[in-house]
Image (cartoon, rainbow, N blue to C red; front, side):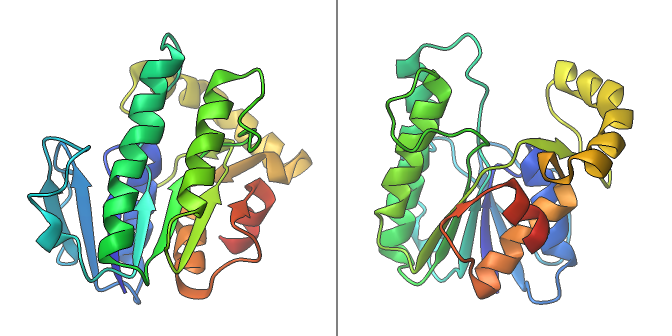
Length: 220
């Protein structure tokens, strides 16, 4: 299985990359982004793209893949809806439309978030934009498209957030993850389970296109 991975330098993407490289069914991972992932591995290839809204110059590198794991994302804190939509909805769709044309048999997996608003009319800006992104992706002519909606993700195997504040928060919250997993198991997942769940739906599919926290944990 050949996989495209967007966002390999982020916390979610790091975990997904770790699981992809460890999976015996995966023969190649091509990481696409503005910067290299910083990893080296016989299965791993890198494609640095300066403009993530335009893939016309690299289309020959993006064909022939079985799955795409799209883990790019930013926080909406301090952003206007217009700016957040551009870096969430527009950037994601620029890649997805290109990939749907080049790889119609591909399975596309998008990392959204718990609480995403499928109606696109709710009061929370980020949830509306994520909902619009999900809906647009599910209309594209992929073989299958799945919207992952994780909440709290415990980073494992050295996975770290690029944001210092988030790194500190995860250190402080580490003891809480164990309690949540014991008392409310479907309120938290791990970077390992997210990566393995993505690989599972790429191989075997899932019951529904919206993959909520309990589904992620079951699949992973």
